[in-house]
Length: 331
Image 1 (cartoon, one colour):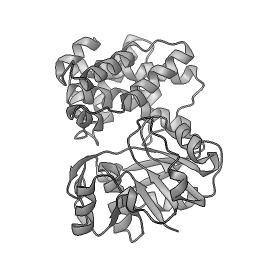
Image 2 (cartoon, one colour; image 1 turned 135 degrees about the vertical axis):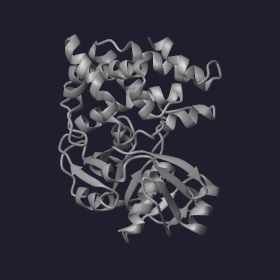
Image 3 (cartoon, rainbow, N blue to C red; image 1 turned 90 degrees about the vertical axis):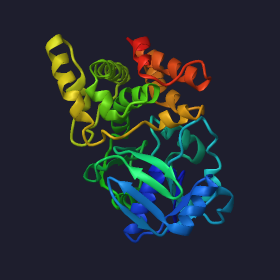
Image 4 (cartoon, one colour; image 1 turned 180 degrees about the vertical axis):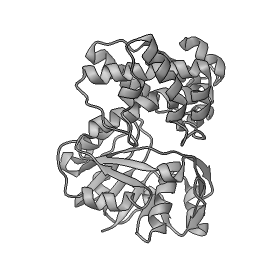
């Protein structure tokens, strides 16, 4: 069976490097021709949380001339048409989306429910280019929550073998709950990191952003629970139980715990930050925007997630800049 990573940027390069270092085959696919050329010439280099270089096979989408049994989808979400995946996928193949947010719906629309798996990823990386990517999470805390959005899928075991090359894989029957557990953290830490230019560790340490992060998370909890979501554990913890609150005492406890939530990912900077820095559209509509959409449908307020989306769009258009002072718009 042939496997490919479609979207070999920061995360895709790191995952591909671990898979190849374990002796398994996977093609790395990216539109970044300079990165692809460096990968083929020098191999994939991972540094930071792990340090190694490994030979890989990399190619641009126009050079793909085979079909794959497994495609790991690791592009950023942007409302793109994913129907092209059908031309790359074997008849009994499967697409496993490792994208942020709630991406399974778009994949199902493109390839069908029986050919879709989803995976919530609990680690981060930063793109360095020229065949290199920095693992910004603790190597021992790289985890995956893998599942099917519509019941059992026989390809789950095969996909798990690949992902296990990089970290601990938990197969869950509640993929939506795992997605929302990750999304509740992303809407807080990724959103603030993007518009303020802070690491996840800095977001947790600063008093103002720590309070905002907690409020952003609680908007996500309320929207999810009103929508009937039952949260899954993430890296062994029930984030909704740790960080939701109904009184001042519980809120103080949650605020005290919050910096520890990202201690293994404190060097991580949101990928949205790099897009906004380059004046490119970012994934905000699929992270904080996903919370806002669910909250509106469920009839719960989400003012902070709404505002952080507006700030990000203003940065995209050049009407605002990335800076810590953006927190005062949220307060």
